[in-house]
Amino acid sequence: MQELLDQAELKMEEALDFLSKELSTIMTGRANPSLLDNVKVESYGSFMPLNQLSNISAPDASTINLQIWDKEMVKPIEKAIINSDLGLNPMSEGQLIRISIPKLSSERRNELAKLAKKIWRE
Image 1 (cartoon, rainbow, N blue to C red):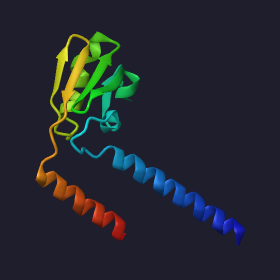
Image 2 (image 1 turned 90 degrees about the horizontal axis):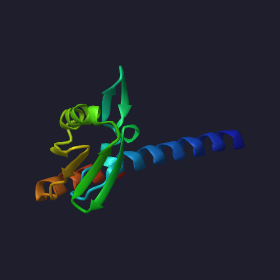
Image 3 (image 1 turned 135 degrees about the vertical axis):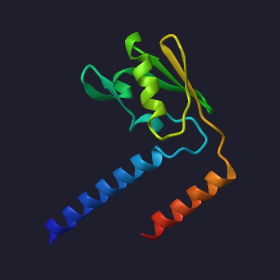
């Protein structure tokens, strides 16, 4: 019986970790480096996460900065961000890419509220 409880507890912890990670990538109008966690960039023949190709920071509430380590990767990173379906528009300045996060619209607020209700019902 204890073994079943331990397995259930482990599964619940995994589910909460997954939910926490998914919620951190939701665009709420505030800059959060984790928004880019799922963006993969083709680099040297394989796909790599952005955090392995650059330093990612949020210097203020509406901007994400990526300091690219290899200047040859600037264009592929821009392309990956544009193609990520996040609706972000990167602007490069040498090896620095700035991404302005749009303010949260009332339409987006309603979408997030519906999503939250759906999650809590399940």
